Length: 433
Image 1: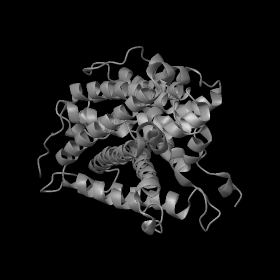
Image 2: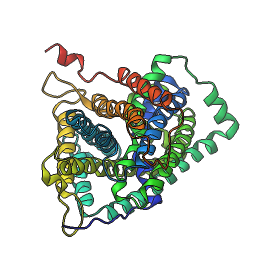
Image 3: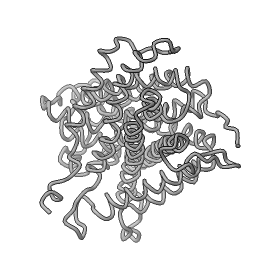
């Protein structure tokens, strides 16, 4: 039996959360959000952050008790030990949520590649090609070891934070601080439905906190490190998101162009602030962001698969540890393959526009699929915390959520509210078939 060794310290755990959160939320959703609700995008992102923080508190308490991989699946399986069907459903939902999130990140990165990087003579490649290739490479990276993957996560997360700071600084330098804040203040929207809808889409980025808990088995002193890394990553990302929205509201690009460009709009905005060099910088940052977020999500998905294998709710091979790299390589390979299948299905076979079939999916529906599979287990984790407090009152809790059961109940209601406002998983074109 190969002995497992913990290799990830606080800074890597923090980078896992940061790297997962700083991805589609900034580089793809910021353009869409500002085009639809202007400066109120800040409100939408803060709503998503607050809702995420409620469930993150529950994750932190559970992580201070259980120091294995698996996140929400681990917590609910320890809480409801005799309800295998329920815990299996949570595990599968989280696995699909993480792999769906990874597919969304890489598919978004693929759009940036086709828009800004690939030369014209390669534009004949099917959309999703670079996404699938990236998924395979990231799977190989994770299979070689979490220490190598964690170091990669730390370096890339630092690089993209620097890029975003340069983007924000460019906006304030171009407009001037007073003008920049004035433009931001003048663009708030009263579209409550739009704000909540954007908050539902933005939640997928703040879910990065769960990737930290899902990797607890690899983290040194997880009972202390996981809660601290979760809190630090959510606070840092929320501040950074707000600054980016301020910068986007000062764009030199017309709003209709931002709306048309969608997930790649930030590249055009950066060119207006910083010129071609700035655009190249943002494009590089976007690609790095999608890759690092995908890396963390694959790690989290494989951790859940490995735990399900150990508990007999997935093939036992999922729990096998590689004799050289000491990683659950079967679980990693399965997660990677699932990501590739989702990319092909949602982007290549059934794109949002065009295609040879009447079924149209695309990035928005993929986001809804991934977020639904994340939000539902999160609601159950909040419920599990209430039950766990009553069923195991004597167990040691290094961190305790204040205001139980009121706070977890608010988390349940908020998660269900976001689910209601998600893009419909089955588009009208399918319903008419």
